[in-house]
Image 1 (tube, rainbow, N blue to C red):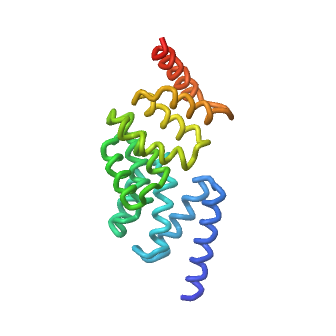
Image 2 (cartoon, rainbow, N blue to C red; image 1 turned 135 degrees about the vertical axis):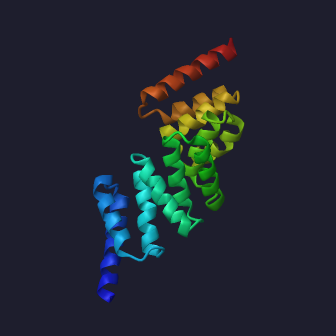
Image 3 (cartoon, helix red, strand yellow; image 1 turned 60 degrees about the horizontal axis):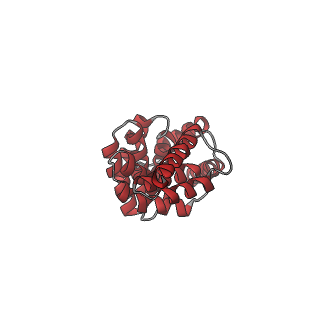
Length: 200
């Protein structure tokens, strides 16, 4: 039994290092699945495996991520990362209103978490058409990661929709100094056009 525990601990440490290093999902998923199978369901190690499986799968295999997140939440309903993984998976599946509820739950458990604030703010702005409710959330995310172009773009979009065009241009310009995607360039052109209309 002590040898199994040592093996499990070593596996958790190896996976944690791989997660920190940004290991590819193709290599992580088999390790996480193996770990989940060899430990007691509901244990801390099992929760670690399922949490990271859900987070790893959410962008590319949202159905699998949703099932794993639900399994984890059945044992640990206060796991904010599981709620966030479920929210991301459901938004990719276009179940955006359910995704919003998931992110709201995640933020109630982990207030101020910038990634959750960003995703929820973006959904408020784009899906619900509530930019005034989105701006405070996106401001939290932007202040935590001011150089992240995706966060800045979401914040700028919501700011512009509340009439803060100049602030939106300033936010986006600063974040895009290192380069921009096509969508971010299109957003900047739209902001400039709005700015010109407001000044004219």
